[in-house]
Length: 362
Ligand SMILES: Cc1cc2nc3c(=O)[nH]c(=O)nc-3n(C[C@H](O)[C@H](O)[C@H](O)COP(=O)(O)OP(=O)(O)OC[C@H]3O[C@@H](n4cnc5c(N)ncnc54)[C@H](O)[C@@H]3O)c2cc1C
Image (cartoon, rainbow, N blue to C red; front, side):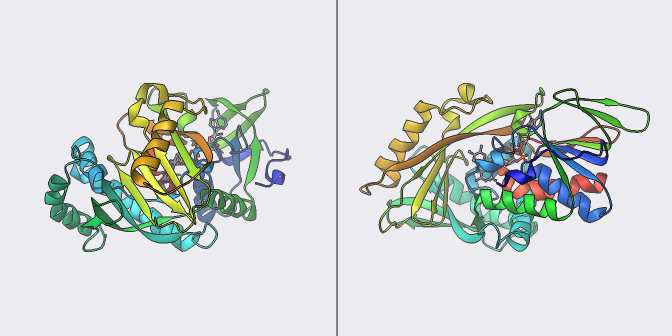
């Protein structure tokens, strides 16, 4: 990321819209707002140059949910809400592919849900596929989104998923920053402390005592939000060194979306396992969880890439934000004050769609 974005700028101290958070959500919101109101003045405030943002630690899956994830959502959210969320994710993927596809190396790929052992009842999920496919078709998906097949390499059952993709999240983030700069959106590298309603506008207090006035305020701080409604959820990821003659291609999920695996060129990226230690992973601390990291590595070595020699190149962690009700959404906090947070592990696809929804309220 170019430092010039973040160099101290002459701030107007009076903006039409101030957004806190320069992750995907904040940036999409700013761009959508400028598209609607080209003359408006927009400021984005971020405390960490976007470096700690989930958006910059992301695994690059442009996905809408595997069959077990969707069935789990049916149970927790109800059928209509689960389908609406899948639909929004599909729309987000289409938007990204169309608008930023080239800039972020978007490629459509076949995804797969793997059934690694007996506890995941493949037969049960297959018996629900007809219904799931028909439901998805009713909200604009292909006729047969999910199709059972055999993974010949691993000799296990899988369900193929049509309509997902892969992208380079760092390139997407940079493209969004470029777009913001091109339309005159300003940035301020500072920590947001608080806000106060004034008679006609809102006073925004930043670290160091700086006060900015704004007509509307959007909080897009995600897992770092200090609210009872949104909990931080740390995610662990690793990536291998290039693997000679790698046979694995596309996206793979298992265990209701708790694990995700994909090729990145001739490397393998593997993440997840938060469900092994929910309590420890409910944190904004960016440390690695050695227990989960070694579990991921063992799973990769002994099950997913059996007999394929590989070295781990990098391991990292990032912080997601999860709403208590499990549904990412726009929240109206007050007159001209909004929260758009809690994107969970779906922010790639969902953030542009929810950003657009928010801008329609502004
Ligand atoms: C390791 C990992 C892998 C993931 N993989 C995927 C994936 O493959 N596909 C997918 O769809 N999703 C994935 N996700 C989730 C996805 O990255 C998030 O849903 C998405 O990036 C959320 O974007 P955001 O802009 O809402 O939040 P963030 O990207 O977290 O941005 C929030 C911003 O707010 C700033 N901020 C917070 N508090 C303050 C404050 N007080 N003052 C100023 N600034 C503040 C932070 O510095 C940060 O830049 C993954 C997440 C992680 C952690």
